Length: 204
Image (tube, rainbow, N blue to C red; front, side, top):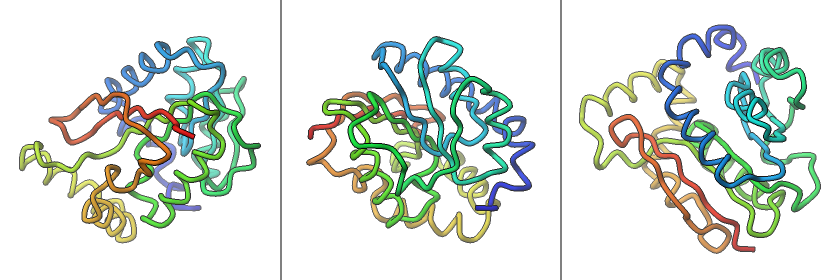
């Protein structure tokens, strides 16, 4: 995947300040759960992975962008940062206490997002946790924030924006999540309620 080949060196510089409070809430949520191991799906440059490992969490990252993983490996020399398709991960079933995925489901395409969540469920231990950070349905988000997000997503490219629009048209994570597999535990909102950190528990 070459989508991030050119933006990878600037990714943290551009989005780091915006992501700081979200990264902090993710870290605090994980530390409260105290999982034995964590899988960060679509880990990107590994900024969240670094925070986890610095705080004593055993974490592994996977991503489909070699450009992003190159930066991730430099930032996380003690962690595995693996090139893998998140819909067909090379892990045994029921091997992670917690799996997290941030800002990837809305951009990957609806069918791909469904497959990713299915494989996440496969690798989660029974009663393990799924932590998702992504856009909400925007019903309580101010107009100017919605327009800003649409502009950013449009700038990311036609395919990216098309997937973003379909994600919202289909109902977002509330529709995407299989309620026979996952139950909502908690939600934390950011950016004028345009983004949510949502914690689920695996039911099977």
